[in-house]
Length: 329
Image 1 (cartoon, rainbow, N blue to C red):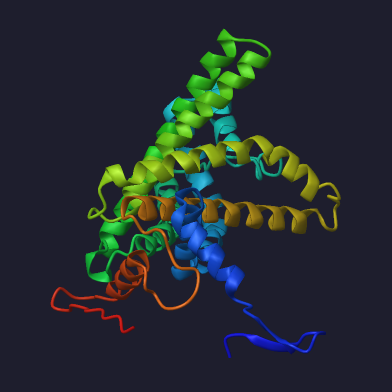
Image 2 (cartoon, rainbow, N blue to C red):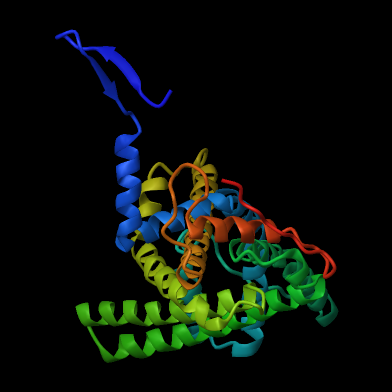
């Protein structure tokens, strides 16, 4: 029944259309891009099961972060050749990107024979590639890349290693730039300049990450918008990260301190994964014109049909397989 009949005090029946406000809001957001675009991003995030993808990325990130830090610090010790000040600056750059772990762990490099170091670094690196593989899968899903066009097992791992190398170089550059900025300014200007450097580094970081973690069928120019949005939001999260840590770990004790740290780290990683996927959704929605969307009812809008058609074609797993989509209204 489309509506509800009730008896009015004067004896007449009044028809109440309960869906009228919802339909009015739906038409309003379809006419205004400022509202229709973010709602389309939110709906596509739901269509892609973005919450599940973000949780999976955060899960692998939790088990990958410590092996990767171990590898990075070990290689850093060889590259900097015992320069304690430079090594400390780069470590602080890492802590700036991951404020959760900054005050909770101490970074110590691997040591021992050359063979033991090579085996240890290779094992830790392999264990840390889980998060890059999960991120590639999530971004390919968001971009509706068919399984047949996704990178092979070997290519996926090589891309993950390439991303980790680029991130390491960016951390070193960030540390050097921050040192120069801190030495050239003082007070508030030094803080503002530090945030600007961090923002620029984050923009490059997200552009490189999106480029290496998505299939080559996606043009690089289609990745810039989401990278800039992600960099701005991530810089803000870094700025308030200390307050968040203080709130979550304020009751830190010998009994519950470890649990509080684990919870804070998991929440932070999941938040970062969601931010990255939302930024990727922005890229797809903007450059494929996937708005306005209909908030309910059958997929009658062109953006709805394009989205669902792309989701169906994701299941193409062989070059000989072709999925056709038909909408019946």
